[in-house]
Amino acid sequence: MTVERGLDQAASPAALPRKLADILRPELGSLAAEIVEEIRATIPAYARPLDGPYGKSIIAGVEYAITLFVAQIADPTASKGQSHEVHHRLGQNEMREGRSLDTLQAAYRVGARVSWRRIMRVGRRSGLSSAVMSQLADAMLGFMDELASVALDGYLEAKACTAGALDTWRRKLLQLLLEVPPAPPKAIAELAQLTGWAVPDEVTPIAVQSADGGIPRRHATFDSDLLSELDGAEPRFVVPGRVTGARLAALQAALPDCRLSVGPCVTLDAVADSLRWARTAIVMIDRGLLPARRIVWAEEHLSTLLVNSDLNLIARLRQRLFGPLDELTEKQRERMLETLRAWLDTQGNVVDIAERLKVHPQTVRYRMRQLQTTFGERLQDANARFEMELVLRAGATQPTPRSKWGAYPISELLPSQRKSTQWLAN
Image (tube, one colour):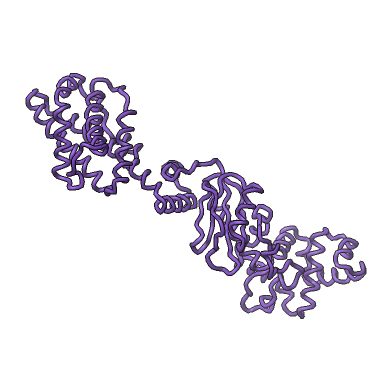
């Protein structure tokens, strides 16, 4: 439970009669001693002498707690700041002393039990009504729950600052940023506070691919504001804000044997999408659809990523559009497709097509008559032309069953950038 949730659920002493403060105030000194003794007697971890700094912090925590509770009955606007600070430090000290979270929470339960036992005695002695006693019980239990939450935050914060725990929390934070649907901003802020990560307005995710396909080997440490997970199935990290030239150079130096695919800089609610685009860009490189480079900027290839986002759909569309080419030889299909692509790109200008294909304009006219014979009115249909261009730009896909066409992926029929075997040098 966080501090905020504890505050939301706590019943405010403001609803209680203020005269109760005068009734309870004389009990504070002896009540604090009773709570401390009960904690020491029932929880073995607290049985040691309390005359050192550690003991003083526990005594101070108990005294601040019950004093603040009574003070809020007398004045609902009484500040909680000092008491919360004491209990936050108390939670930190508990973690540093090596005690478990269960032990800490048990101490608060003992404090609540002893306090309620005393309140019942005082209530009977003072003739308080059952309605007031019920209100008092709700307020007291809610207040103790609130302080327990403050101490819990301190405990977790101290735990997060240990070397191993800090790495674990930062991994959890990265995973939280990548959740779909997006995690609540409050949850991100709480976990970021534990790790000391300043939540930015925008981030840039980066997908990582090692040269051998294994776990990337890091040759230097990353900046402290970078969240990373390199030993998973899909190595990745998140950089606050936009990736600068200096940042990119540092990452290249730290991961000299890796390709880095940089996703678009986005707000926190779109990190998962941006990383997915970056990862897809790597897949497109592996398939020969994007230039093989050590640094890839997904932002520069969004149209390619979009067109190739569903390979099965592209294969289906390709089969429907280009089925008439099934009976041609491989060379005939290649010639027809490169002419069609050039015709679409140049909006039918014969001279431009001839220059692009390095053939005579008359050859272009001959080929266009072949295309017209093959595709007929579809060449005049804007929707059909759009679909043809989509497929031609999509590149390689899985072979289409029961079709000769499926044996010839477009990347083999049209000129395209082939994957380099020396991509780390690019």
